Structure formats: structure tokens, C-alpha cells
Length: 195
Image (cartoon, rainbow, N blue to C red; front, side, top):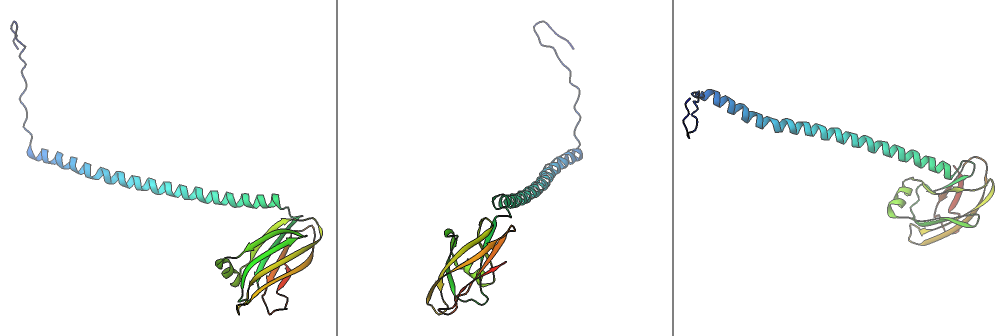
């Protein structure tokens, strides 16, 4: 290496090796293969993470629904203790073909429930379903229950009936079943029973 005044230094560079064409192809192939495989591996990992996350979300949903059911049960026990609880259920008699429009319930002269039935609710009752129309608190002793129903008989004529019943409340929860039957005019279409 020589350097002169006012001139730049001269640097000697070693001779380059020539790349072998096969080596170059191999490196290119591995690079391309890596570029193709990497996203697939990343996509599989991403799918696995999403499935894991989805499973965790489903578990959380299940836990939340379980907690909500427990809270609902605790709320019912708190609001309606067993020593004062009364529940009223409505059912249609077997084979009842009339259309029930509405039911109104009064307990000791106070209106406590009124329900107008949709087609789906009526269909469920006709198939043997039971509806809890009222849950409340009453003291032990004698009480009066008044039931009013309105609807249409299978022959197309309207009906509306009211019945009054007495029942006794003990320390245990009281479950009252009201069975409705449009029957013929003049026949008792509302029956009361303990459940």
C-alpha cells in the first residue's frame, strides 16, 4: 500500500470467490420454502390460539349462566321465604280445544296477576304445559283467591267466567293449581287444586 501526498490511500481487495450455481439455487430454495412455510405455521398456531380462546369463552359463558341461575334461586328464596310463599299455576284441562285469551288473579281482593296469552303460549298450554302466573308472599291462615278468565269456545262463542276460592296457608310453601275448562255454558270451568 502506497500513499502519496494529496492522494488517497490505495487498498487491496482480495479476489472474490465465485458463487457456485448449485449453492445459489439451494439457498434460494430454502429461502422460498421458509417464506411459504412460515405463514402456514403461523396460521396453524393462530387457529389453535383462536380455538383455545373460543373454548375459554364458552367455559366463561357456562359459568356465568350457572351463577345467574344460582343468583335467581337465591333471590327467590330471599324475596319469597318458604314460610310465606304462595305460587299460583295455570293449566288447561286435557283435550281443551277452546282459545284462552286472558286470566286475572286477585288474592284477598288485591289484583296480583293479569296475563294475556299469545298463540305460542296457548299452544303450549294445550299440549299439557303449565304456567306459573304468580309468586308472592302471604301470611299463614285463610285467604281468598279470585280467578277470572276470558276466551273463545271451540264453537266460536265467547266465554268469560269468574270463580272465588278459599285456601289455607300453613308454614310450608303453598302451591295452587288452577285448571281451566271452557265447558258448556253454566258448567264450572275453573277448578282449584293443590300441587
